[in-house]
Length: 259
Ligand SMILES: Nc1ncnc2c1ncn2[C@@H]1O[C@H](COP(=O)(O)OP(=O)(O)OP(=O)(O)O)[C@@H](O)[C@H]1O
Ligand SMILES: [Mg+2]
Image 1 (cartoon, rainbow, N blue to C red):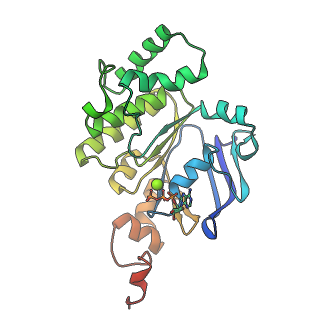
Image 2: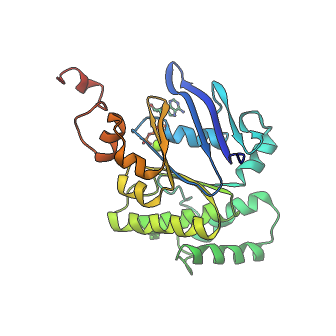
């Protein structure tokens, strides 16, 4: 079996006393588009931060190919991060910088390219996301969907092997979110990039995923083909996929008077 690109191996993580991940086992293979499903507050963004080495687990290990992410030195970690693109939930563009300077930043930090080379790269990446000619625009002049495209272009600036998307359709209307989904599919296919997409939009999930994993109570309870999520008889998975109010997933307060 091929070495996974990313492997979360029995990962436990808690904030103060609150357990968030209770033994997560998950492998991401080359060219997967893995959709991670799970409740709000369930630890999905936390998983992405572990992969980027921003957080360390209480126990267990995160490996990137053969690298042990939670043991890397600062400089090795920076090198690793330059191979991973991240698209944040609300785009996270720097509001005081125009599109060009936002995109230039990750490349300038590495200090290997001239400004002219960077400009050529920016032109190429903006064209890939359908945003050619917007270099001089400020983030505040762009719609939510356009900002999302720019943040996608920024994630691609260093030709990453892996792109992490945290709620790519957050705050977008259904049409724009379909457009972004399609862009994610086209770009990852064109560039042979592996991706992890966190979402709780089921329509998006089924459009994008080549594989799905569901995080529930700190563990991966199903990791499979998308089809299996539609037919699963696990009540938690079923409730999540269908979005029904009644089922094992409830708000803590609602437990008291459920019958
Ligand atoms: N830095 C932190 N310090 C303390 N608690 C944190 C920290 N980051 C996250 N948490 C807590 O850990 C839990 C998991 O958070 P996380 O952001 O990973 O959830 P999520 O699945 O991404 O949720 P959402 O779908 O709402 O984005 C939450 O209860 C959150 O409050
Ligand atoms: Mg989150």
